[in-house]
Image (cartoon, rainbow, N blue to C red; front, side):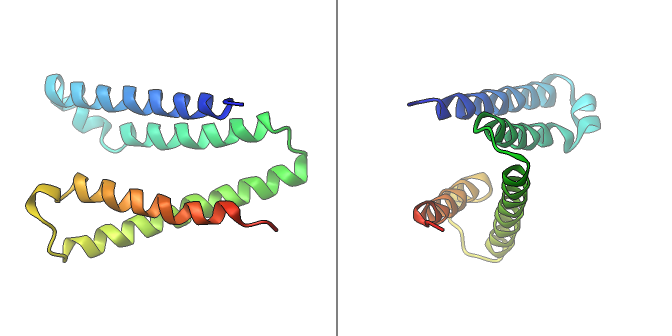
Length: 125
């Protein structure tokens, strides 16, 4: 029962390709990299949203279940983005070791957030 790995692989491969493209554009075509701006990272986010939609289709939800699933996903994404933005804002004023500043501490904070969200997995309504 490993069907869920298809979505993780799908999202991971697109995210990796976008990051690779972003690094190549930054190195070899800086003007195009600047012109694209924030749109390249948005591709990764959109791919994760598409993955959630495909998961909903695979589960064969009816209209009501789809609406609830979509609203729940939207609230979940908003909660994660706001929480990560708040944590990153607090880290600006924190005493973070030099080797972890920037992306390193962001990955650690994101991992800790993910562990916190795992607690919701066992809730039965």
